[in-house]
Picture 1 (spheres, helix red, strand yellow):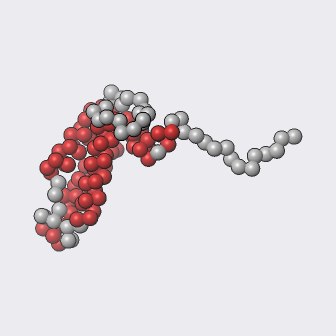
Picture 2 (cartoon, rainbow, N blue to C red):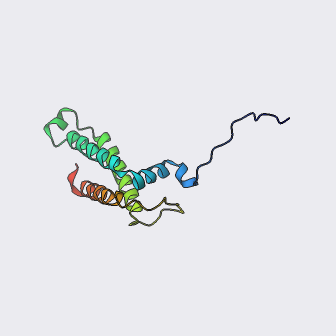
Picture 3 (cartoon, rainbow, N blue to C red):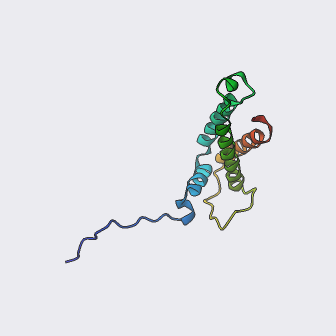
Amino acid sequence: GRLAPTRPPIQTAPSPDLATRSGLLLHELTHAPEGLLAAVSRLLDRIRELDPGRPSGLATQGHAAAIAYALRFLARLHAFVLLRLRRAPFPHALTLPDDPSPAATPVLENLEAALAAALRSELP
């Protein structure tokens, strides 16, 4: 008879790009951007609370490192939203998943507008 395999078979992703963290983010932006919009809203609120120009921010030393990290994250997320909306050039030979659903597109538009506004002027 046949010998049993000594290891389980390797599972492969349908696309090498979707097997990355970037692929997971693009998948979420394509199919379920509502959760990201809510998370970004909460993160923006937290950054404002840590603003050293506010009394509560001064009382907690402003947390400049946390603010800088969050702003860097938001800038990168904004780049992915622009990529998903096809408003930015592809950084490399990235295979994008299907176009966003008609229901997801307005949410992506709102997410892009919120990120753009926050990164341009609203945050410390």
